[in-house]
Length: 202
Ligand SMILES: Cc1cc2nc3c(=O)[nH]c(=O)nc-3n(C[C@H](O)[C@H](O)[C@H](O)COP(=O)(O)O)c2cc1C
Image (cartoon, rainbow, N blue to C red; front, side, top):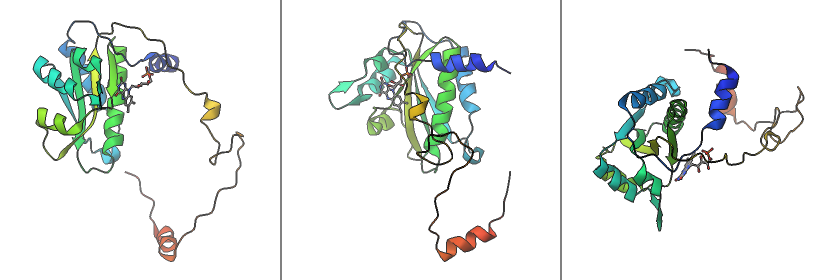
């Protein structure tokens, strides 16, 4: 097992990288990133994710035109030697959770391999669907830039845990073992259902 402190330090030292060296990402490293993504958890183990690996300069250039919001576009999308589109089965209820978890694993593995990534949320989906010939049963969740970093940005500040964590019920900042739960306003059907639900595990 990996040392917990090492894992924590890997997660803390990952940065969004927006400047890349002008050299390609070797296939073996791409494979390792995808292997990490493939082992992400997914609801009912559906594995709804699909990954589009974009190296072709013409396709990258086209995609970069639509990694944009109004009058600005992300310069690093054009410059990155590799783009990965994270997408998956449209209509799947947990598509975004599943694909995002896979994306996070991919980004951490990339970091462990000495690569930099950046999640690009501001993208125009419709043009990308056309450029990448994505069928209608597939939905885009995210776009990642990938490459060897040409910068070492300082970590953007994180909110302190004291501002983020409550105990037992929302708003309670005392780490006590006891709290008063709220009451559920349940109709007769919901009461009946609750009584007859069978616990399962699979
Ligand atoms: C859902 C999501 C969307 C993002 N969209 C963009 C984006 O469009 N362009 C960009 O340069 N960075 C984008 N980022 C990167 C964030 O700006 C970055 O994660 C955040 O500032 C924290 O910095 P760090 O990743 O270095 O810790 C996005 C990150 C996430 C998780």
